[in-house]
Image (tube, rainbow, N blue to C red; front, side, top):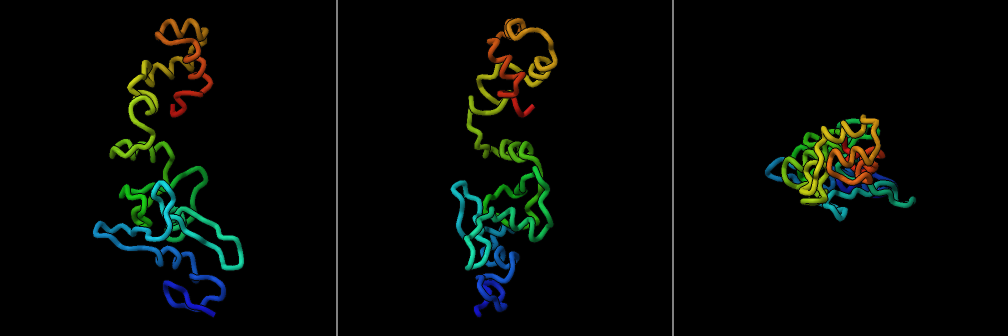
Amino acid sequence: MTKCRHCGNSVKSKRYCSLKCVVLGHITISESGCWEWNGQLYPKGYGKACVGDANTKPKYLQAHRLSYKVFNGPLIDGLVVRHRCHNRKCVNPDHLIQGTQKENIQDSIDIGTCRLGTGRNRPGELSITAKLTEKDVKSIRSDKRTNVALGAEYGVKPETISAIRLRKTWRHI
């Protein structure tokens, strides 16, 4: 029998006695109050928590999602866990909130860390090549005229109108 690496409790075949100890055993508290994950990281900088026992194949979870679940409660399907502190390594449950992917992207746009790209790779009106506005897109989707007629009115190709209507582009609206 071995001891939990965080609290010292006895464990049979695991390194940690609980998921709470998995989280607390991998943090360094920063001056800003962030609990920075000091274990493995995913390529984009988020913590990578290994859960499971020594007798099974390891399962990896994003550390901030695990921390949210352990300290704040269940995760709601379809929502992401956002960082109020904007620190990808942070697993402090007080810095984590659930929200939509759209809210998460808007957070990163607001603070200038959006990884959607710059210039032409940004969504919708944020693209430097955008010829349409969100208002135009909503009007196009509700208009019954042909793609050719709408393309001529808005100064874009009929294929662009088709892609908007099929939600291949402007999906965020």
